[in-house]
Length: 582
Image (cartoon, rainbow, N blue to C red):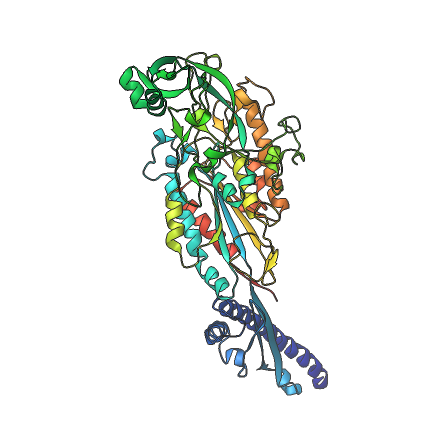
């Protein structure tokens, strides 16, 4: 009987020892994972630094202290097998309790683990809804009179964007130390988008040279003043003051011509206002307007917009009574109002260049034109009353991707400059976010694979590492286009570019078509490999917004300023997170 008990004791004893070894093995592996994550966080080069070794060892030992489970002393073999990866290997033994009586004194346990930084060459574009409602605190109505209120959503947005920067600060430092980079870009949208000067600086040929606007032409009263003598004629033709001296009612010399002998007549403007207007489309040379405020120089040169007509004066001599400076907002390029009808299609047709991410402009259908709010007018027939100019808001100028390494103040100053005004056109923000991020479109690099981490454009790889692209899309309202606003699609009531017909006030149909454009723009962005996050702030998270995000977990509806800041911090921690690779 005693002999029969020996195998049973061995079986039970081995079970006890193996269970104990299993628990110790799991604890040893957990310690390895913890140590590799901690060491990787402070790893800055391609070899194991003393700081990384100390940090990895500290966390490993904290989770599996010397002598735990009566384990034998152990050493950590810490290495960097590949750039960005920290690896730990270790082994030890624990004594047996029962099996030692059967010749098994110890059982081995071991662990091998690696941690890899989960980002390389990261580009992040933040797409911000800067419609007028952002002036209000959560729960506020309208645009709060166009004045930013205490506790406003736009103030929370500024803080949230800064918290993202701070969350990723250490990651940015590590990238820079390895000659890689983290960049931020900003696309601000309302009913228009301010990217014109960026396009002009990249290539002036991307904007048209002439464009047609819904406008008006002043009808001037011509007055004729006669002068005798060549010198008098020359003075009258050259200087307004001479004409005014001859007849104080005359202002603005328009030109003139020589008559027989030494006599001449000079056409002058009578008084300072036109005698009515003629309304309709005007096709204008926009080159001077485009150059009126260049981003490269910061120059501001007013451009005349109302030429006096009806005389034979040379063009260079025509005076003007009003000038304007381009604010940088653009009208979108050619669309397709037949195929994009508010229906179920989710991919834009090839000739809808307004929803095309990558096509480089090559003709006027593919070029953008400057918005020119100063010359846009509704005629009396369109308003049912007095002629008026449509609302033409232009959001804060966008910023291309750039590094803000060791330049937090520039980042903070920029987000501090954001102001809110205008309507809500989600499709504009989404397509321009994709354009800013694409490495095969408007801002593609001349060297798609480069070792230059200062390349201002969008290479596909830097130092052999791919570029990960993220878009954070934030809105505080549902899409809300109107037929009477002057937007990136002109004045819909007059131009009919989206609805395909003029003189329609069907805002519901217009909304359906812009929603379809938003879906198409979302799909185009994700097709470029862009990881899309969507935040609905103090508004409903609609199905379209949820579907736009790359994953259901990357769409969120938030109701408080604190929640918005926390969400940006969460996104930053996930973008810059570490992952266990083994």
